[in-house]
Length: 230
Ligand code: APR
Image 1 (spheres, rainbow, N blue to C red):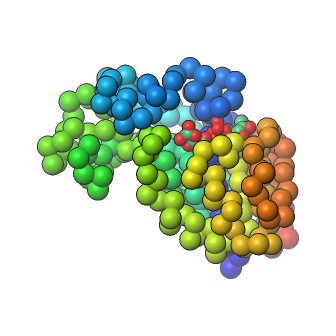
Image 2 (cartoon, rainbow, N blue to C red):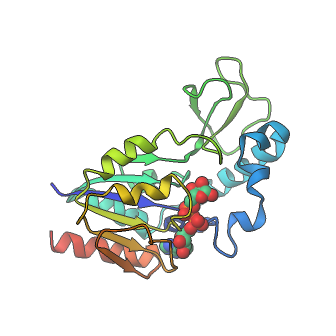
C-alpha cells in the first residue's frame, strides 16, 4: 500500500479559525516567544505562560476540524498514511486520523515539570496554577518550547524515509528541526505543498508540486486526485 506522510503546520487549522504563528495576524505578532514559549519564561513568569496556553485551549474547545483535516483522514481508507504535525491542537484526531506524531506537543495534555514521562490529559481548558502531577511536581503544558528538544523528531524522520509520497500542508517550514523533515524523503519521492502563501521550499530537492490554495480547498482536491489515480 502506498505510504504517504502528511506533514502539517498551523495553516491546516487556519480554516478552522485557529491563528497561525507567522502570518500578519499570527500568534507571534501578538505575543513574544520569549514571554510564553521558552523554559525561562515558565520559570520567570509562570502565570503568563499558563494563561497563554489556557486561552489557546479554550479557543480550541470551540473549534472543529475543517475539510482539510477530514480529507487527510479520508486518505487512510486508500493509503498507508502517517500524519506528522507541528500543531498542538487535536483537530487531526477529531477528524479521524489515527496515526499522528505531534512534534511540538499537545495542548490537551499537561506533564510533570520534573518528569517528562508523566503526561496527563487535561479536562476542559483550564490548567490551575498550582496543579501538581503524581510525582508532586507542578504540572506544565505538554508543549515543546523553543530551546527544548523535539523527542519525536527521530521517529518522524524514520517514517519520512519510508514514504512513497509527502504532502506538506500549512507550514512556513521556518522552524527547525521540524522543517528538515522534507529532506528525509528519499530522492525522487514526490512532495506536494498545499499553502496559499510561499513557504520556504528552498531545501526541498524532490519533485515539488505547490498547490497555491487554502488547505480547506486544496487538500480535498489533492486527496480526490490521489484517490482517483491510485
Ligand atoms: N491553508 C493552508 N496554509 C495556510 C493557510 C490556509 N488557510 N493560512 C496560512 N497558511 C500557511 C502560511 O502561508 C504559512 O506558510 O500556513 C503557514 C503557517 O506558518 P507558521 O505560522 O510559521 O506556522 P508553522 O509553520 O506551523 O510554525 C511552525 O513554529 O512557533 C512554532 O511551534 C510553533 O509549530 C509551530 C512552528
